[in-house]
Structures are given as C-alpha cells and as structure tokens.
Image 1 (tube, rainbow, N blue to C red):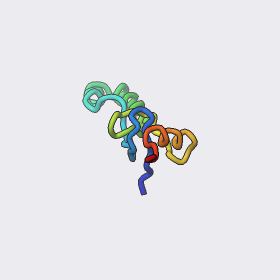
Image 2 (tube, rainbow, N blue to C red; image 1 turned 45 degrees about the horizontal axis):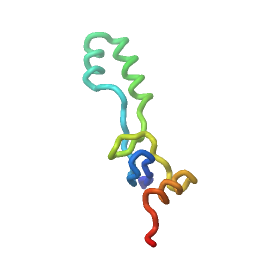
Image 3 (cartoon, helix red, strand yellow; image 1 turned 60 degrees about the vertical axis):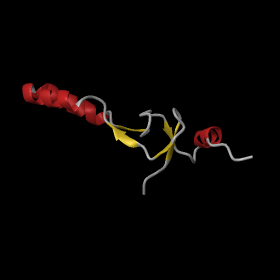
Image 4 (cartoon, rainbow, N blue to C red; image 1 turned 90 degrees about the vertical axis):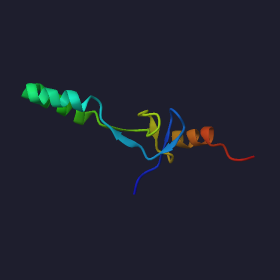
Length: 81
C-alpha cells in the first residue's frame, strides 16, 4: 500500500514519485564511449534516487503523522469554521 505524504513546498497531498538525478542520454553516451566513466556515472545516478513531490518535484515531502506533517496539514488544509 502506498504511503500518502504532504509536500512542504507546494502543500499538495502526494504519494511521491521516484526521481533520479542526471540524464539517461549522458549515461548512455558515457557507456558507449568510455566504460569506467559510464560505470561511475551509473553508480552516482543510482545513489541519488529520491522520492519527490509529483507536482513540484520538491524533495521536501513529509509524513503527515509526524509533528511537522500535522503542522503542514493545519496550515494548508484548515478545518472549516
């Protein structure tokens, strides 16, 4: 089951999505031309994968069950008065 998060950047409720830094084209070019730089670049790309907001791509997504998450929910989604 997917976990729902709240984005601290834009305030949207999101499941998040996986984002990998770098470029697939550059990685492919490095693999074709040079094996060692291609390997180094591939390892770097795999280690920089993070879950980000699906709307604004901010890496600052927060679990709504935490104190900060509860504060963000109260800020972005106030209860009706």
